[in-house]
Each structure stands twice: as C-alpha cells, then as structure tokens.
Length: 559
Image 1 (cartoon, rainbow, N blue to C red):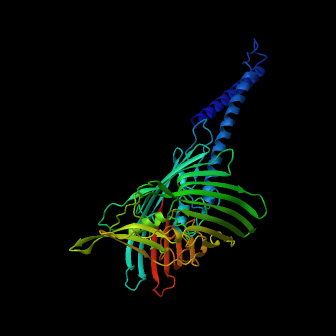
Image 2: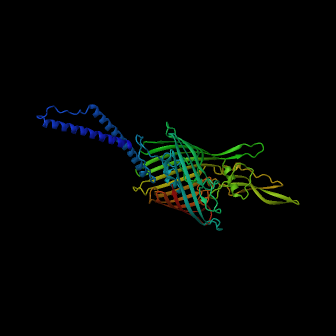
Image 3: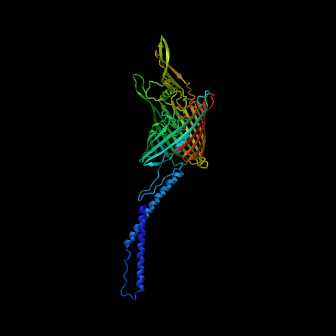
C-alpha cells in the first residue's frame, strides 16, 4: 500500500500545482485588465501548461488506476476463497488473509483434500464407519509452502455386556486414538503424504489404544505413506503407490476402515455429460501383504502373499432428488494361509515356529473362518515312558477356504429438500467364489517322533454353502456444521466362509459366522468437536448365546 499512497500523494500534488497555476493566470489577467489605462507597460503572463505536463499527469493517473484494479482483483480472489470454504460440503475453517504486497501477483488460498481421496464422491468413498465421517471433517489449510496438516484425537468409553455365559467378554475400558496427517503437493502432477497413528502395530484394523499397562507410553506408528501421480496431459488417470487409503468404494462387510492397504493402485475415471449416467471409473490394485520363507531343505524360495482386484464404479442421476452409485468389484487373495499362520501364532501362549518373517497378527475380534492348525508338543522319555514337557508350538495353519470375493454395492442418496436432513441407503452383497477351495491343499500333520507329538485340529468343518455376506445401512442427517445430527442403523449377516475374517469390521462380535446390529447417533457440537454414540449388538450364527452388547461413547477433537 506504500506505493499506492505515494501515487495518490503525487497525483494530488500535481493537481494542486495545476490548480494554483490556473489561479495565478486568472488573477494576473484580471489585474492587467483593471489597470490597463494606468499601466505604462504590459503585464507579464506566466508560462502556460504544456502538453508534456498534461501527459505526465495522465500517465500517473493511469498507473494509479492499474494499481487499484490489481488490488480489487486480489480482494475479490480472497473473498471467493472464503465463500468457497463457507459453502463447501464440510465445516468451514477460518482462513487468515494477509494484505497483498505492492506489485505482487494475486494471492490464493489453497484448500487441500483429505490425505488420500478419489477425485469425486469423497464423502461417499468409504461408507459404513463413523471413522470416515471424522476423516471427512478434517480440512487442511496450506501451512508450510506446499505442505498441509490435519489430524484428530478421539476419547472413547467402551463397556461390554452379555456374550458368553462365562462372562469372558464383559469389561469396561477407556481408549484413545490419535492421528496426524501431512500432505505435500509436488507440482502439477504429484502428491505425497504420510500419517502417524496410535494403536497396536500388529493389528491392521484398529488405531485405538486401550488405556492400560501401568501408564506406559503408547505406540505410534506409520499409518500412511504414499505418492500419487496424475498426468497433467491425461487427468482421468491416477496412480498411487505405498501405503494409502482405499481407492475403491467399500463397506466394512469386507474391509475395516482403519486398515490402509499397501502396494499400488490405478484409477481411470471419466465424468460424463449425459442426462442420467454421470460418471464411470475403473480401479485396479495389487496389494502384497506377507512373505513366507520355504522350510524344505531343498527349497528355500520366498513366496509372496498378495491381493489382486478391481472395481467398476458408476454414478447415476435418476431424478433431481435421487442419486444412485453402483459398484461391482473382485478381491482375490493369493497365499492367504500366511494370515492363518500369523493369527494362530498370536493365539498361542508360546508362539514359536520354524517359519520366518512373521509377527503375531492380532485382530479386534475372534476370526471364525474354518481353519486347520497343526501343533508340535515336545516330550521327554523317562524309563521308557513319554512325558509332554508343556512346550507347544505352531508348525502350520491353513484356511479351509480360498478367498475370491465378488462384491456388489448400491448406494442411494436422497435430497429431502432440507440441507440438514439428507437420507442415504447402502446395500452390500458379497460372495466368496472359492469357499472350501483350499481343502485339497491342507498339509497332513507330520508323523510323531520320539521327541515330538504332532496334532492337527479343525475349529469348524467347512461348508461351501456358507459363503455369503449381507450389509444394509440407512442414515438420516449430516455431520458438517455446528448443530448437525445424524442417526443410523446397520444390519450385518456374515456366513462363515463369506469373507476373510480378520480384515473386515473389527468391532463386531466376530469376523464371520455372525449376525450383528449397529445403532449410531452423532452430534456436531462444534465445527471441530463431534460427539458420538454407537451400540453394537451381535452373536454367532446358529447359537443361543446371549447377545453381546458393546457401547461406544466418543468425543472427537479435530485439528
């Protein structure tokens, strides 16, 4: 503004000087006319204002006008950015506006997207979890150059009632979750991001940390680390690699929302200008999850466990008040037995095994897929009689099923005419096309020796008819601005071989072979504070076990 003030001062000065010269000319002329008879000599006249003086004044005024127009353009851009934040589908975040420097280019305010998103339908991309609603509320404002930050802290009280008659699942616990995200925009084509989160590092489906352990410090680990590439000459294509959020649409029937897959994914999406069909997209992904070293003396090759899959996405405008999103996908797990072995190790008190490269894999709920587990118990012989030593290790564990999941989802979004009361319905149907397909590959238990007794057990016989899962969810209301409310109900029914039971919703009674109800209520106390209540009521299929009720009282602080 200093330059603008100088220009104004210069303009006013020149105008004053011009006016003074004009006044002097007029005064001298009038005096000469009045005294003409008495004057002995003609009066002298001042020099006239030249064309150069006038041009100089015009140039100064034009320069000032250009400066004023530049300032108006900058203020308009800032005003539009603020209006964009206030009218967005997420809570507004105060944006600090700094007065522009002289001769600077138009200032802009950059609002970054939440850590890892599909280009469209961000708020719908991952349904069926209050956790996703929190992620969608995390707005990021550009901080240090191209780097943006966000995060949240959640406090939870969680009592359990009912369940097995021995009361083994009844408890009352307090939990905390903390997450911190950073995203950097690297030019026109690249984004990179990372996230740190609390929780058990051996549990991929939860970032919660139970407040226990004699006040010991709680673990924080790398939850996201990705690089995303969108070619500037072909915007429909997006490639991502590393540890990233789901690029495909899903519910927690198949994938828990706290799980972030690893590997690579490709998205090819087109927005269409037709009356009904508005978007079509194709997603592919390759997600390695384990390596297993060979144990045979002649074969030490390392085998790779990996998930291959893809999804077709379509979005339809059926009416002015009704939208349909339809998805069809396939998840093919190769080498899933490595999961069975890791889970078995986590469930034994002495998880020794000849297999290398494994951590015990924990899960938020008991995994009920049909599983064969082989154990080895060490014995000693005294006076010709064998005695077990009590040292037992897991030598092998395998699923009775392979897992090739065909997943179809339909979502209806209804505009009720009131912005605070939208309604949505989600239906998800999954079928394991390879149920009981691993039975020919089950390895027999080794023959007993003088020092070891081998035993193979099966937790449940495999029936290929039990291969389907169902998810039906309805929600009313939104969670975007202060005072918003949302209520929801979800019905889940998952047969034993339908899904891979340790990767889906970790808060239900058990991963498969379960019937489950979920009731939710959320209130946006403040743009940065959310209150939540969730009731989960479930029990195993085909049993008369009392219903296990799990209540969750949440307070979430978003920054």
